[in-house]
Length: 316
Image (cartoon, rainbow, N blue to C red; front, side):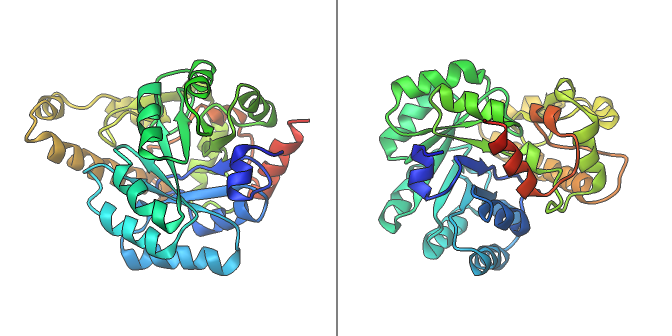
């Protein structure tokens, strides 16, 4: 199963286990790497630089396969510069940039031989990051989980393939081998998958979270602007229905103020991420579970190895 992504990273299958805020852990990364795919985790999953470095070292002690780090590169991430410096020092294999300009990341990573993949949601931004020197584009389509795009993959992927000269990796809409095959057929050089790996034995989230992925379906996925300042896909639990998916009128009004917008967004992010963390790791009736439409194909809790084997067999 050779593609530009497999050749670039030296992996067996063209699959990235997507970085998932709070969910991704070293056990999941190692399991993915040892079973033929690559994986990335968010630097923001670790509170301190020491913890971040320890996670990188832990993975490297157990496998020599390539993995990546996801960096939020906009102003809401106050740790960005420190995280980037650590990635460069540790010479991670690749970085996935999200929610901002990757210019500084690319400038620092190129001399260190670190690949940079950039999240994009449209052609305009894809061409911009290509001009800046990105090594690949992660096309975040409408079917993605987390911070999803707004264009269906059937339109987004062919458009980027036609108008860009670097590899396109599709994010969203893949949960089985048939869907993976379809993405490669329309020109993607790989896929980035997250949701299907949450309900796994290696994941540390609560059984309530894992079982929610099994019990709910694609129709139960909604977008909320209450948690990160940017629309986020979550499961429409009774609690979410109670609190609503729209930012309050006060937040909306303050977000229109150019001087206050940055600080209001940071407040929303901090408050929302605390709520997501509490839902993911402790028993609570106030459940906010981040997931994408791919939960339609999640039917049981299983090892990551079995999910990868199922994906590959499903392409036959």
